Amino acid sequence: MTPRLRAALALYDPRGRLAAPAYRQRLIRTLLLGFGLLCLGIWLASLGLRWAGFLAVAGILPVLAALAIQTIRRLHDRNRSGLWLAAYAVAEAVSVLPLERAVDTHPLPVIALVLAMLGFLVWFFVETVVRSGSPGANRYGPDPRAP
Image (cartoon, rainbow, N blue to C red; front, top):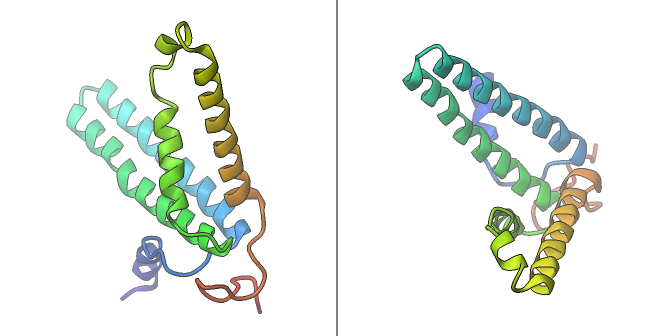
């Protein structure tokens, strides 16, 4: 197996830990790749190559899968289960609900829901992107920053 193929397949392995600086680097690269594929798909579709544009945009799915797996590894570095990513997905799903219909009849529950959702999203961002990992080995493996 070539080193490039091994490195590409390692993006889809949720075992182990990932330090914060490495996660930030992979996050930025993944977001740039995803935006690049989106722009390529829009450009191809504007040229009348709709199927090629669709395939370019569909290429975002494996990119998002790799990012989700790297986020699980980052959560492991914080000594947290990968199931926290499911809680994040639920918070993201709540953010697309048509809450403006319920604001007029139930304003306080809607405001409480939005504040709770925003609080969780900010906590998740700080937990995965900003904070350093738990020191030493934990149940998910050795410290990735250890020499």
